[in-house]
Amino acid sequence: MGAYVTRRVLLLIPTVVGAVTLLFVLFFVMPGDPAQLIAGGGDRAVPESVRDQIKARYGLDRPIPEQYVAYWGRVATGDLGESFSSREPVTEIIARTAPASARLAFWAVVVEALVGISVGVYSAVRKYSFLDTFVTVGTAAMGAVPVFVLGYLLQQAFGVFPATQGWSFRLPVQGIGPNEWVLGVFPASFEQFTYLLLPAVVLASVSTAVVARMTRATMLEVEKADFLRTARAKGLRRRTVVVRHGVRNALIPVVTLIGVDIGALVGSAILTETVFNWPGMGSKLAEATAGRDLPVMLGLTLVIILVYAVTSLLVDLSYSWFDPRVRLGEEPA
Image 1 (cartoon, rainbow, N blue to C red):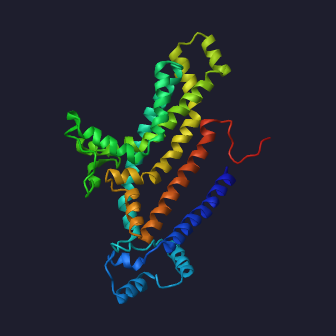
Image 2: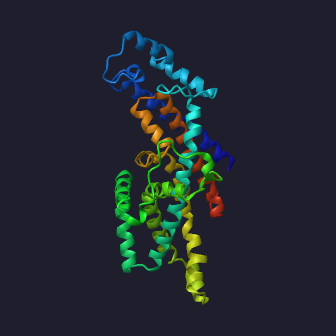
Image 3: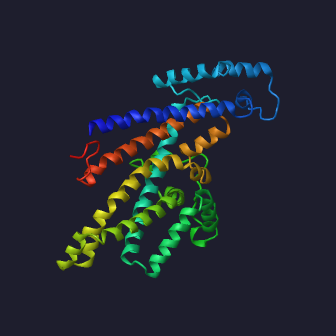
């Protein structure tokens, strides 16, 4: 087990370095002068002296390899630099936006687990029925619709329903303060719940469809197992056979998928956060990319990669807990 964890941690290093290197290269090959954007000039002419001062301040006048090495030197000391546009330290930006992304991802996973597993189990139990067909077609359609399209459509749809006129599915620009959350993730007011519900549903839409289809497939596979036939032969009630014996064994790959999604949803929330004006890392990363704010881009990317890698590692380690037959990192006898 220790050797397996060590290998996974070491594999994280080239992943992070590769992602940062790619962003560095793309930043400098994109058309346009970064100093012009930092100066807020847009199409307006900015004096050459001003651009030179900006380049000198942020080290953009040095060769790219030198800037690359200097960046990793700062990262090694915990300094992720400061934003080109706001001059705010990147660590402060991360500290402000990461909790919002974590809350949204948490509730998206809750929706994904509750709805996806319930629908998948019920569809498997009622296989080949009208409901099963409806779930199969519905999950396929849900997985094909881009989240930003679904977000805009649901905003428009719920905006015209009289029952939802008192709801607001778009967060104000200033966001919601930390005191309006219980234990950091639970909405402390109905108003906050109205802001949270639709973004969480939209972010979880594709993953929920995948979980439902996987749960159905694994349940149908488990139904053929000998231990389930034995449970039926003992005269156990159908609910006991399905829940105690069927679902518990069918959920091993599903729980793995949900665990990986915890990290993936943090990084994939860019479009959802932008549509609903959610003040998380995703929307901030989109804003930084549009403004070519390199330090913010790199800092947020590092955090997203680390979150995804750590959650993936924890899920892999949980294999042996869910299924004692699995021994990670050990050679078969």
